[in-house]
Amino acid sequence: MTTQTYDIGDASRDYPRIASALAFLGDNWRDHPDLDAAAKSAGLSAHHFQRVFTRWVGVSPKKYVGALAHNAAREAIESGASVLDASFEAGLSGPGRLHDLFIAHEAVTPGDASRRGTGLAFKWGVAPTPFGDGIFLVAPRGLSALAFADPDIEQGFTDLRDRYPAADYERDDALAADWARRVFTPDRGDSLPLALYGTNWQRQVWRALLAIPAGDTTSYKSIAEHVSSAKACRAVGTAVGANPISWLIPCHRVLAGNGKLTGYHWGVNRKRAMLAYEAANR
Image 1 (tube, rainbow, N blue to C red):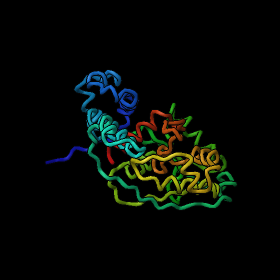
Image 2: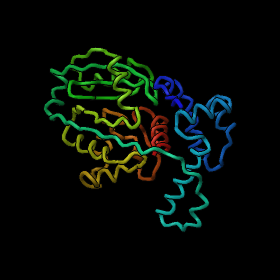
Image 3: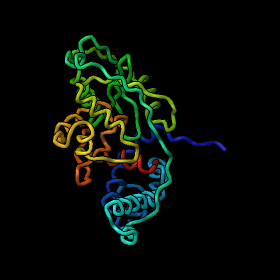
Image 4: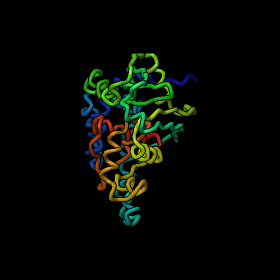
């Protein structure tokens, strides 16, 4: 039997509708919305929505809602609720595939960062990802940035270029497509070299982000306590916001202290989609 793969380009085109559906389900899962209601939120017929959602997320809409309920029940138990009370929140857990990232982290000195890219030669390009078009910035030593082309490619590239204004840039979309396959292909098995240009403090926070397992979340306070002290929460937030490599350095797994989704450089809906994608494939 031949296994049909999900093309990254198709996943990128499906992302806006899936993001809308995930937002709807995230807000309404306690009401157990039916397939028609979920499909309407994505602007699709029920049959088409079922197929697109399952292909993108990895589980059906029903199992995804069940996963949200199951997670709520688990959190209730961890907060001290009885099993009986928590059972009212329980639903079907979505089947998943353990998807670990093995990253060879190559840090670069703060001196390199202070020179604002002088002497650096980057290649950059645009390629589709499961979360929309990605902009990849690649140094000779590895991936230096992964952003998203919202609202447009030029603005997204300008955002990256402003980080290293003195560097040289050459566009190479084929190289970006190769990196997209390496980053977003499940069970790829190889390590991905990252060439990070930041201060010692930023790299310390980014290393803490790398330690958060896929499918889990943490708080800014927890990160602060890990790298310094709880009093450094605001400084941690600044370093998290400066993370140049989305997805691989998972700043999307950091939530506010009350567990709410907070501002994300590439949009809260995309952050929600990333967490849903990881939870479903856990």
